Structures are given as structure tokens and as C-alpha cells.
Image (tube, rainbow, N blue to C red; front, side, top):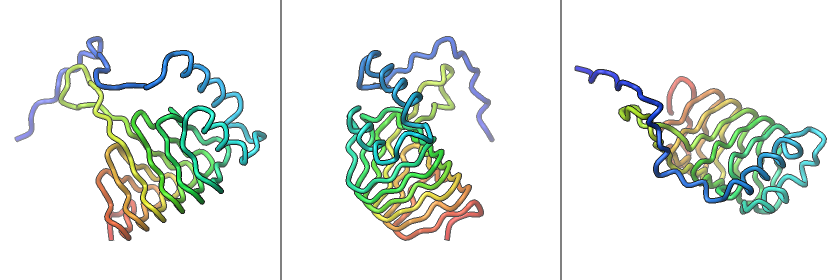
Length: 178
């Protein structure tokens, strides 16, 4: 038997437990830099890691970030060496996102650390960090949800949704895991 759906009372939402870790001025400055510079096709790819670092991200060497990539909070982002982040990828990092060395996040992939408690009438946050281990690949239009670790060398295939941890070397496609 299924429990009845929670009666939503969104007016009572408090956002309890979510720490942006920076004040309103830093948030506004990042959103301006993101939308005026970072996402633009004409902003040089080699400058994107430096801009992220200026806002508190830890970014390794030889990192390639294409245009239209969106990063919610750079100060909650750690990127290793030799990482590629494809055009239009979206890092919704309300909580920390760690991308280890030699990882590829392909075009329009989404890493989303945020969610809500479905049983909470006020729909409070249920956020958790994401970790992409060394050599993993999140393919085009794939989605990695909050709290997931993609193991070393594992693949989240194009269009797949990773809602639980993938062990090292696993391949998870839209049709399931192998």
C-alpha cells in the first residue's frame, strides 16, 4: 500500500540546512560574471578556469570548459587535471561537486546536487554532494543526481539518469546498467 501524497504547503518553505557559503554581494558578482562572460561563445575557453578560481573554485591544469557551461556556485566546485566539460553542461552545485582527474562531462550533461524531501509538506531541501572519480565519463545529456558517486572509469551513458552510485568501471545507459 502506498502512502498518500504529501499535501504541499510551499508557503512554509524555509530552506533549512542549505548554506550558500557566500554573501549576497559575492553571489550577485558571480551571476553577473557567469551571464556576461563565462557562458559566452566569445569568452576564451582558456580563461574560464581562471574565472572560476577567482570565485573560489579549485581547478586543476589543462581543464577545457566549453561555452554555455553553467556553474551555480564556483566556491563549491573542485576540478582535477585534464578535465573536459562540454558545451551546455550544467553544474547545479548547491552542495560540493568534485570532478577528479581525466573526467569528461559531455554536452548538456547535468550534475544536480539539489533535491527536495518529497514527504515534507513544505518541500524542504534534500541536497547532497556529487563525486566523479578519475577517468569517469558523463555522456551527452546524461543526468547525475544528488549524493551520487560515479566510480573510477565508470560511464553514465547519453541520456541516462544516475540516481545511485556507480561502481568503478560500470556502464549505466538509459536502458539500465551493465
